[in-house]
Amino acid sequence: MLNVAVLISGAGSNLRAFLDAAADADYPARVVAVGADRDAEGLAHADQFGIPSFSVPYSAYPTRDAWGEALAVQLRASNPDLIVLSGLMRLLPDGLVAEFAPRIINTHPAYLPEFPGAHGVRDALASGAPQTGASVIQVDGGVDTGPILAQERIAIEPGDTEESLHDRIKPVERRLLIDVVRRIAEGELALS
Image 1 (tube, rainbow, N blue to C red):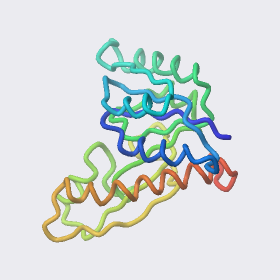
Image 2: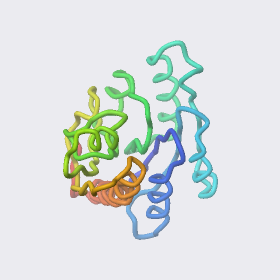
Image 3: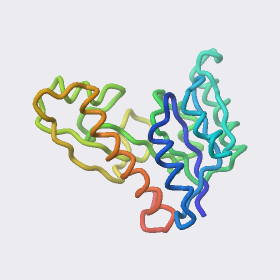
């Protein structure tokens, strides 16, 4: 059984889908902790599933590195085999990435390397591109530059808004995340 810690910043819709998948006895991974960089409403999903949760507010620390060390303390306590960034809207400090790599993966609402960063959906619309997508990547020291583990294209439709496009991307992100974690747990996908 693969032990997974999930980090979020907001409502945790991807987290909720992952928790539902992990609740199935046949799914080869389980969530052992859920953390956030603020008082995120998505932490309520962990409570509903009886999973320990924690918050390490970024604003409570003088530097990104100090915040990263506090976050690392919480992650070490749960001893995860894998860390999933699912809507965490904060770059992890290099020291934390170095400690836990290659066991950190991230979902992203674009077809990387297209439209990296915090505004992938907005950037895709602004570019006039006919399509974008969803990706799951390994986290490295860059901004959405790690090895791609899975991705899928999604058409941008006439009249799409940031909200409508993101609403079509989210289910694909969830499906890709659940499948990538399953493949890692079953040894089909090796992290390097």
